[in-house]
Length: 161
Image (cartoon, rainbow, N blue to C red):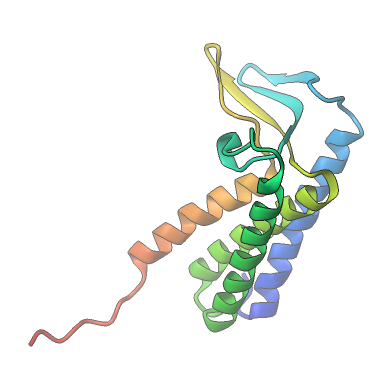
């Protein structure tokens, strides 16, 4: 695992590349709305989500595209500063690099298509999880690791007065 900010930024770059490569493969394989069976609980399906997670604000007239783009850029800039400050804290930096890579992977889609390309669909007993992508997965794993890192971090003891 990297110990420098540059190494963590490279990891974020790998997330972006893997995300965009997977979306390129799906866009060249499936048509909008197509579903391909993978396993009893898993399909490939091409959808475009103009909103955020769980299609939040997807029904809005278009302003959300730029809102979520700017939000992701601002959060990524802040994460980059935090990674520089905390590069030696592996779990914390890993979580932030995953979140940053995922956020920027989805920014690419918003700029190119006006919506995020989603294609992974999980389901069980007729209940379907909203479609998602590699960037969403990186953000989710990064967020879980970020919370975990905060619970396991050594905090200086406060003097009781």
